[in-house]
Length: 51
Image (cartoon, rainbow, N blue to C red):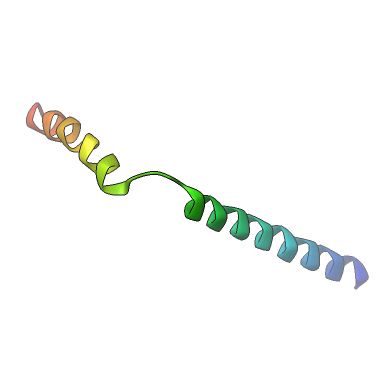
């Protein structure tokens, strides 16, 4: 029983750490989303028109 409890607690801690690191990376990211999407639009339009 103690082994299962230890495994569940460590899994919870690892999951929480991954969530916190992911959230921190999203918050501190300097990516301009509309600009990043706009740079991909011509590539997608050309690829679709050649199909």
